[in-house]
Image 1 (cartoon, rainbow, N blue to C red):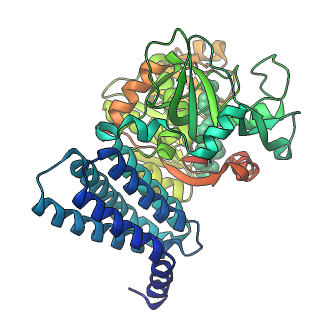
Image 2 (cartoon, rainbow, N blue to C red):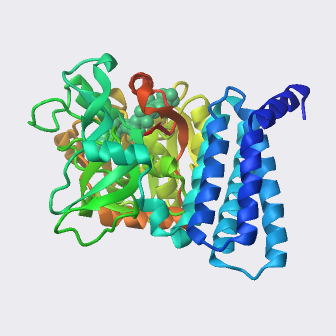
Image 3 (cartoon, rainbow, N blue to C red):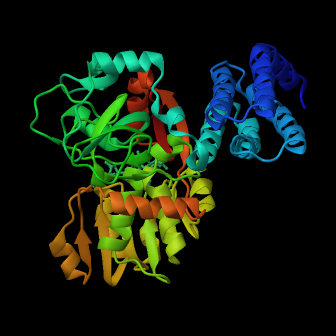
Length: 466
Ligand SMILES: NC(=O)c1ccc[n+]([C@@H]2O[C@H](COP(=O)([O-])OP(=O)(O)OC[C@H]3O[C@@H](n4cnc5c(N)ncnc54)[C@H](OP(=O)(O)O)[C@@H]3O)[C@@H](O)[C@H]2O)c1
């Protein structure tokens, strides 16, 4: 370990001294106590203390420190296990600590290579472990009882949200207090933990894409993961405490807010193996990729697909879905996006800055165009006769397609809860993973929009909702 890393580790460990004390105290509770709710909750608190440290600038040291802390917790639990018969509390605590250890080990390497991402890595690890441990064993009181502050906010019916009162640049995104929405009869009210950022959010903000004739202000954001806190009178599918994710209707207020009212059919149980931040990065882009590739494109095992913008939000999921289906995947990308596209399963990657993808002639059964403009224009010529061009970033020329003996399609995505359940199953089976490259606070929403407006981001940006 380098000296500077040791220094950072030492500083982080000093800062975390109190947390360590708590952690050991909580371990002692495991040893003498058998109330599963209390014990799991205490471990959650410990983890949040650890994740709180990730806001410190020396995030890399925090990873190491947390790993060390978790190793101590494991040892302590091991001792407890030797002295006591397994209780539900012990099993839950072990599941959490094992999950945290595995997740931290997995991110430590990435964090070492990219210290700037260490804080996000640590937080993801903690969330992944919490989600994994909580699913089977977390008692309802742990999940359902809002913190004191939150109880107050709920009784005042107020929440923190990002709203637009007029259209324009990112300065129009106001972080402010807004009323908590009332769930309709077929809705659930979700406490949002994370919301992903998509290009459509920016188009709505700019007034380019009119999603509703409701009067302003609107809350943007149409990707989320969170916990159900209330259900409508006619809701049957969900209960308070369910951990869900979704891409809600564009016509209603979105997910850049602490609470979201969403139709029960538009959501699914969040993947058990993902943190809620990672889960929030999944719905919109994965539903889009699925519809384009399979519903409209008709991509089959053994077919060849060209995925444009393979390093972007839609592209990163499209490559994986097509690869999983057994198709040959050719993607366009540039710079470090090339390696990213390969790592996700692209068989070939065309560097769109230096190579011409049309040079291969007609080779693709399906093209997924997420770029539009000139890229769309040039894509007709690479589709084999009988194949399909699906664009999500332009208007297809059906006459031109017909001349070439191909079909051309576009669509605006619908919400789809049942398909999100299929996607969650694929994720939990290890066939698919979101590419989360940036986590920002809700307060940093303007920065998130500047990034998405650059058109150069990799994978997904997610907002952490306090
Ligand atoms: N119709 C629908 O329902 C629907 C749904 C989702 C998205 N969309 C639209 O689809 C588009 C893509 O969405 P997204 O979420 O994937 O966006 P994104 O994540 O912002 O895409 C960014 C990526 O695009 C790549 N890119 C830009 N120009 C490129 C080019 N000429 N060739 C190849 N790659 C290029 C960039 O890579 P480089 O740095 O290499 O350029 C970057 O990695 C957006 O226009 C969005 O509005 C439509």
